[in-house]
Image 1 (cartoon, rainbow, N blue to C red):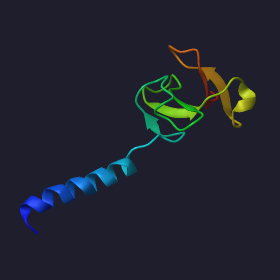
Image 2 (spheres, one colour; image 1 turned 180 degrees about the vertical axis):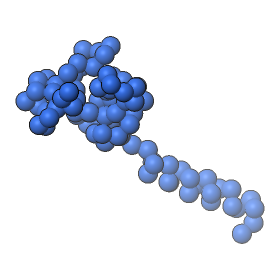
Image 3 (cartoon, one colour; image 1 turned 90 degrees about the horizontal axis):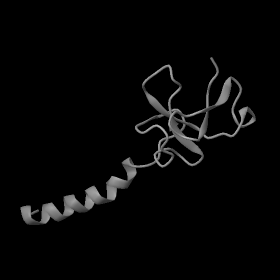
Length: 88
């Protein structure tokens, strides 16, 4: 294959593969911006539990009934949103 043909073929392969690696983080996975719900799967938001500087995706909630056992619906710093966070 000539080198002129290789560049477009490699570029096309990269463009096809790029969407595979991108996507919303699942609940429990690390995220970047606390309070951002675009970076997490539907129904989740980027949060932290106050004990760790690391942020992770957690389910959005309005009260404790929306959370799994051993989790409480708590506010997220700097936002009006709440997420299911581990009970302490």
